[in-house]
Image 1: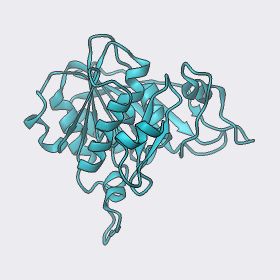
Image 2 (image 1 turned 180 degrees about the vertical axis):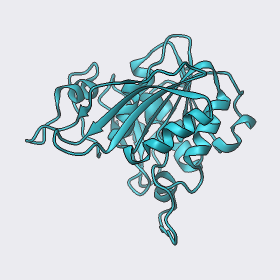
Image 3 (image 1 turned 135 degrees about the vertical axis):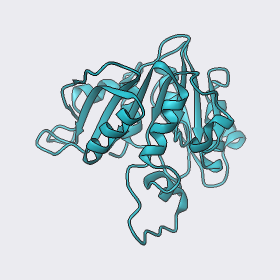
Length: 259
């Protein structure tokens, strides 16, 4: 492990275990680290052998890394705006020895046709910034601010890019906040990504949902299926069985992530 850290880590970075098939990821505590939303999206999305999967707003590459382990045979590409995060993602791919299965690109999804062929992708996943930018919003940590707020891309930008990149009948998967569901549904249909499957996520049984997982089909017919709500924690703070299964993967171990 020490040799790996010396070879791949830069100052201030750490190498975290993903507890899935030995996968690891490089993160920096001073930048935006992945949370439970990314883990849940990686399990909600689907990929099949031979498919091309593109992850927008990829950060340090956790979704492609987890999905590649879960769905072998597909090829995964992550597109990330921030060069520092894209660099960590590339090195994480190297740490895991998955260079043939996962590619990481640095670029702006609003101009993605410069690097990515339109209409060429079977699947697009995205864990985008959730929050609109309040008036007078200033955050000294630009990396955190870009990940959380719609500074560099809006919901409309994300859906417009996904629609351009997806094949006809290609699948779109996103995690977001329930408070923006009316806008999400409206904008998906504007860009001809038909909402097909949705699941609300709540911290505990009696708590209001704070995440929504949604699948759409580019050019799909109108029909939305709503899955039973996913409850994260029992009253004693332990994971519920569905969440334990997501985290355990093939290893029989669980990990913690912020929600």
